[in-house]
Image (tube, rainbow, N blue to C red; front, side, top):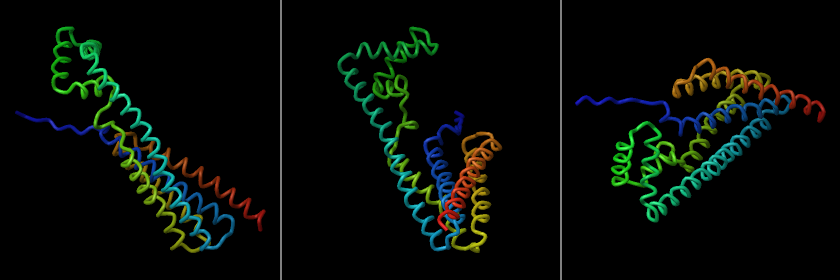
Length: 231
């Protein structure tokens, strides 16, 4: 018997979204912060301190935000599953008919829909209702801790690049080197995420580069204006 192994891009959605969002935010927010502070005419120590503060605050914020939002999704999923458990105990016949109606609406004959619903109920009724009625599967199930850790880790990895520019670049070149390096890595990130998700590469690259450029330009202008006013 020949077995076909297929790889689907949808299986990567759970970790890809958190990883791309974390790395993108780490690069854009930290590089923008560094550029804004550098444009105000401050010294390397102050720029580095601002960047480190941005990395720590950003990583914690990303982790907390992901954990809270994904936990809300998890709470909703668990509430629906608990309700399904009660209904399967209290009204098993109605739940069986509900499952059969779902399969009938998807194109099965009444006889086959009833047979499929019966067999799946005997195998694992809750799993069948979770998957086919609620749309909850192991693939899509919310994982708050995993999402939080992935976001924090990728944010920190992304933020490390502009910080390296502050440490190693000449003070007078920090703005340009940070901008160029960040945009190049953003383009690479867009390419990698497009390849991993099966999306068009040019569109993904252009999207992250344009938004990253806009953020850096805005903070540079603000830093220059307020730096001149304070000075």
